[in-house]
Length: 198
Image 1: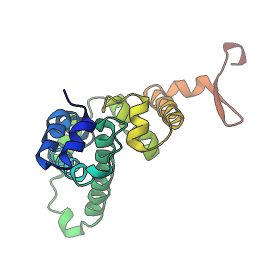
Image 2: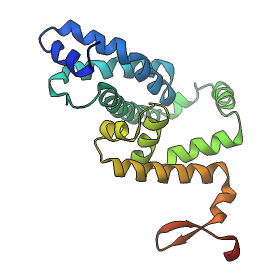
Image 3: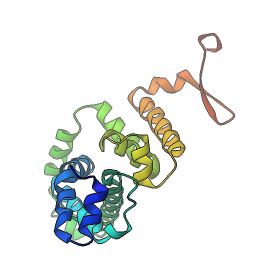
């Protein structure tokens, strides 16, 4: 079985060879995008990810696997999609709002928000700095290890560890707001409070 690097190198001379990279990683890229976007947008992101990867295949760093590279491209495309969607919502004028079916939106929200905990987690995810959120979602939904996340985001592994630690702490507090009372701040660091200090 050929490695990703061998396939990409072969595709530089025979473009059709790149289809093997698609066959190998499309399902994972789509699953990652679908967890962050709706199904239609996930299809678009997956397709565009492989288009960008094909166009940039000559610059691929052969010392690593293709999946982190592809998920890094997908992450950037997801951010672009979110910015475009936010602009579209801001662009709605008052007359357009009259045509929006509020009940349908509320019913969809009710289906998505299965519990108050899910809403708190979703809010906490949205409030995370983009780098922390991307690291967490690449790790959790992209099934990448720390090195893979670092490669996908183009940051050192230590930065990934810091981002994941910070994101996990914030999500833990979102799940259990009482957990914030169990920690105290010591010169900018979070340390667990001992039972004696309470």
